[in-house]
Length: 198
Image (cartoon, rainbow, N blue to C red; front, top):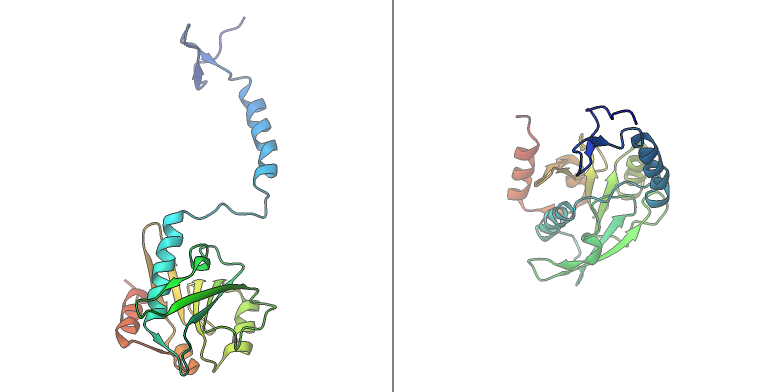
C-alpha cells in the first residue's frame, strides 16, 4: 500500500500517519449533498440569540421614549415577516412606562399597516418596500424602525446598525417629524451622534 501524503489532516493513532486524504473529496461531497435537506438554499442561518436580544432592547427602548398623538393601553408593534432579528420582538414585553407591547407579524407588501400598527419593525428596505411604506404611512403616526437601511432614507425613521455585540441607530428627522410621533430629544441627539461620520 502506497504511503499517504504528509499533507493529509487526519492521522492514525497507531502509525501516526495521515489517513483519509483520498476519501476527503468523497466525504465532503456526501456532506454537501446532505445540506439542502437540512438548510434549503433560500433559508439563511439563524442570527445569534444575543443579537436578537440586543435588537429587542433597543427597539423597546425607542418605543418607551415615543409618544403618539392618541395613546392606547398597549403599543401595537407590527413586525415585518422578512426581518432577521425579530424573534425576541415577537415575544412582546413591557416598556419602562408600564405599557405592554403587543406584537403581530405582517407582510409589509400586502397587509394593511394603518390603523393597526403604532410601530413597525421592518427588514431590508428595498425600493418596493420603501414605496409601499411611503404610500401607506406618510403623515401617519406610525414609528418605523428599519433593521437594514444604511442610508436611512424616506420611509425609515430609526435605522439600526447591528454588529456582533452592539446595536446603534441613525435617525431620519424629516420622516419622523412628518409622522406626528414625538420622541424624546435626547434619543434624537444620540441617534444623530451615532450616525455621524467618524
